[in-house]
Length: 126
Image 1 (cartoon, rainbow, N blue to C red):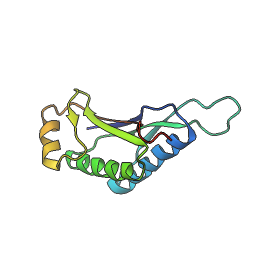
Image 2 (spheres, helix red, strand yellow):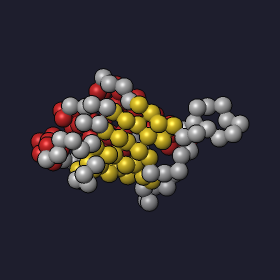
Image 3 (tube, rainbow, N blue to C red):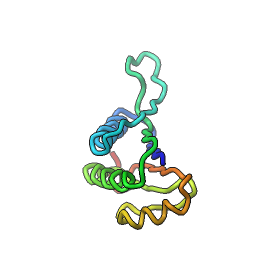
Image 4 (cartoon, rainbow, N blue to C red):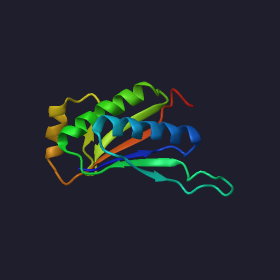
């Protein structure tokens, strides 16, 4: 199963750094690299563009629970964001579900990938 993590905010240096931090955390906890998608750099800017999405390829079902746990931790340190999780088949997954509940939902369609959307919280504009 692939996991796609995307920012639903206008790319800026803060959201890019936050997403990069999440990628580092996931790589550390899962022992697998994340693939970063970057926005095209603006004219005159030397960096390679802002990070706008992450992908984890070929995760086992057991790693999905770890991914959700890591995202919960990451979100707790960044209350300015809200996080939603669903499969590509539009099955919503709550961040507080147990590993068994997640397994039941995901196993209904093993070909579905996980999509994690991150948006700014209305209560905590940054």
